[in-house]
Image 1 (tube, rainbow, N blue to C red):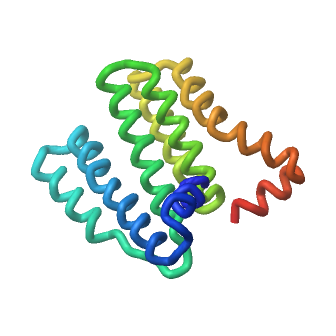
Image 2: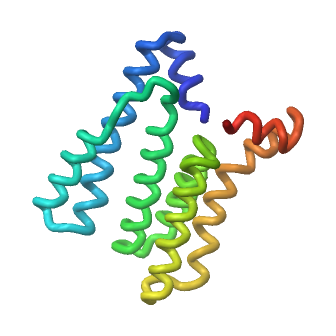
Length: 168
């Protein structure tokens, strides 16, 4: 995604900048885990889940972008939970946008997992009667709004094969 080129443009290209940005983005995941778990569990368990999320973070030697996919997936889940609490449809749209961001970061490894988990969660909510069938279109629009600029860009730069080659 375009986060690391932006970080490098501001702070310069170096391994310490890359690692520090990874730690900062990873640190954002802790409150996201807490916010999500607070909606699903008692407060003591929410704190424990946030603490355990700190212990599960690692700094890999081979890739630094999977933490962006993790953060995007957590944001998508938080927006779904907010939709269930407030019934504001823009939360579903934002959940779709963040699912699209997760797909753009690592489409075949984590993106399909995030999109698949999101879809299964939506189906489960539909089966329980929490959402209507029409609600499926809203995150789909957010997902497409995220992906369309990249498809347009790569259609001028060599087509779908170049787009897919840049995703690995």
